[in-house]
Image 1 (cartoon, rainbow, N blue to C red):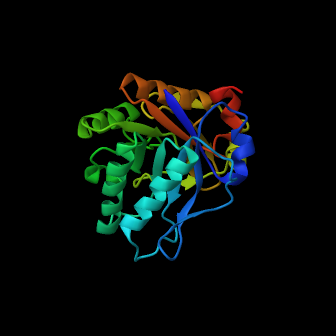
Image 2 (cartoon, rainbow, N blue to C red):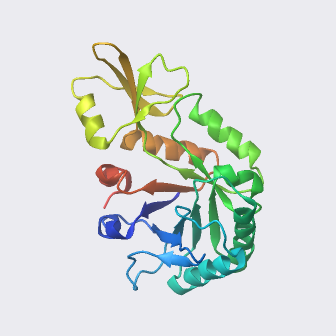
Length: 252
């Protein structure tokens, strides 16, 4: 399976410990609607561009931004671009995506878009997040394969580390930092959930029972294997999220 590490410029040295191409999380759109890059050395070549929609201006020209993105991909020899967009797909953004699909495809480059945009994509690769707290991961991935049968998929291997108060009717938990997870795990036996493809343990406070769901190197490898079994050929990991698991996941 083709794997990418998503990393900001300040983490490139750490990403360099592993023999994986990098999705460079260094790009945004400036107030004038033009592509802006933060802190990426001029000599960086290869991998992918990763574009954030944070502080995206309300008014911009999709034509101009598309041209900027394609030119940067050409200049740095990127294999394509990732739209790391958290907002809903407005008509303006859909127009940008459609232009990028066409222009990058002409140049044999790929475009990756979030699952929220999947119904609007034509040729882009759709990112499917593997971090779930209910149902089954196999069911989720099989449903995505059926739904987007004519389009390629990629795994967004977001590392799970969540603390849920029981009962948890809405399935919403509190995110944990890795140091917090490490402290909570001390003295508790963790079990593997085949449905969620994650590990879990419980602990009690004076008033509540807590259910902690988390990933380690083994569960992330299992998620990769399941994706590969279903024909998904690409996966993304984020630094510093998997920094402590890198050697086990990727080697050096």
